[in-house]
Picture 1 (cartoon, rainbow, N blue to C red):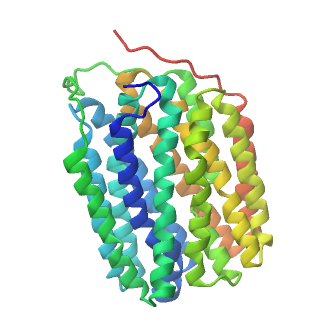
Picture 2 (tube, helix red, strand yellow):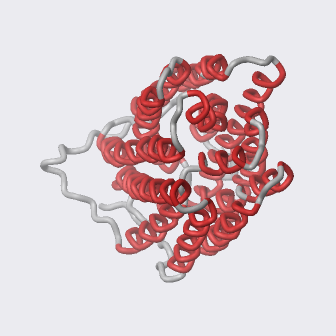
Picture 3 (cartoon, one colour):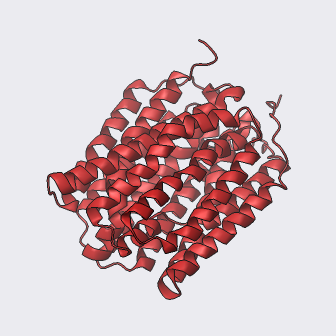
Length: 391
């Protein structure tokens, strides 16, 4: 096989993410409105739901990543994680109070927690080191393609067919289960030799440069609060519920179009440069959000908001993968997701309190300032060196 071609497992996992995100993003853009208008939740409740859900996912990602390093195959964790996510959507549709949605989101994020680190480690397992930025960028591109399809389907069902939000949520169950079937029937993985038990196997050390990189990424995660607040801000400024999925889809169009290219670019240059640029752009957009008051201005901002993630999502994962030995790959991704999830939870709760009790501008400005500090901290992290397997 040509070195320029992505491995079949990478392509399949990208397609699965496309289907899963089509399902989840049919729900996500209208969920804050459903919570506040239908179920009576407050903005702080919305932030708490999203923050706690992401925190649960992040904790599980650490354990699942480490566990996958010791299993002969990562596939069972990946498949079961996607299955839990598919089932959670029916519970959201049946919700009669916001704690139901909290439970559903915890189940959904449990699935994400189980699958994410093993999936990212599997992509690294089958991809040559000089192509990992491209592989992760491709995966993110198909993930974001699903995030375009989902909101557009939701808008068509809400506005074109005049369906209720609950009906849209039930329909969202279907593509998620298709993704699970594809995984169970098509995902191939060469078995690894079983590892020693955790009580007898020596711990694989993680280098100092990994911890420095993780510190910078965690600091940015404190600024990266739930995107539900962006949708709430647009709704409060007068954007109709049926148009919110269009804003969300426009945001993901840019990610889908350019994530693979940005990931491949990170294979040819210092990945820290992309992180600095991306996080500074994020800060500028956050400063601008409170002064937007029209559909046109929100449309532009949601498109621009894709730029920092397009530049950094593939680069972050490839950066992490090149800092650790293969024996600790699952563990390193687990730590990556654990740290980012905890800091996103803290940032989301802080943002929610400022948004509700001080002002919208104070919340967005605080997030922007933290993002600037995170970007500056990247300048003090060491460059990655390609690790060698432990003999």
